[in-house]
Amino acid sequence: MSGVIERVHDAIAAALAGDAVFTAALTDIVPSGGCGLVRVPPVVRSMRPTAEVLQMHQGQVPVWIIEAAPLTAGPVGNLSDDDSGLVMGGYQQSFELLIALGLVWTQQDRDAAYLQRLRIPEALVKLCLRQLDFGVDGCAAIYVNEVDPDPGLKHPNQNLLVSLSANIVITRN
Image 1 (cartoon, rainbow, N blue to C red):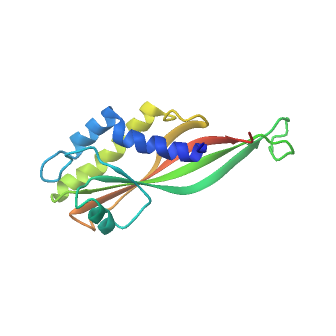
Image 2: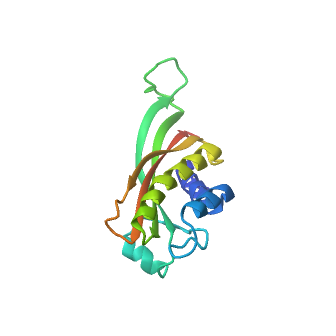
Image 3: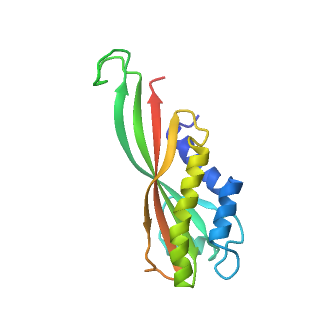
């Protein structure tokens, strides 16, 4: 059985490709046609250069890319009243799990690409607010932590990097 960290990644990937409200919002932001959202964007595991993503999908973008990111420890849970949590018999530890998420798409019109880079993060925030824990036991919440848009340097290919944070608890058993 997979652990909570793997299940969080799987749940995010499933929501990116399968949440009807989110994919409808994304279709509205990146319309079909010349810049083309003509299908639900697939999710690729593991970051890679844009050129490789484009080659893998024969130029069919957009494509989501999900990758592991740093894990920051929170307090260790225990069975005593010791506030430090660092005691024998600790039974759980909480973490802030970061998930690196990227979106690659093509947009020839620089003004349209600019607006897309503004609107896509809001759609992701709404997805996280609607899903909250994405149905994963041991996960309290998943939220957008940081957005790093590529300011058109790879034009007409567009890249948006998003850092998601997940509040998770891993138990001893």
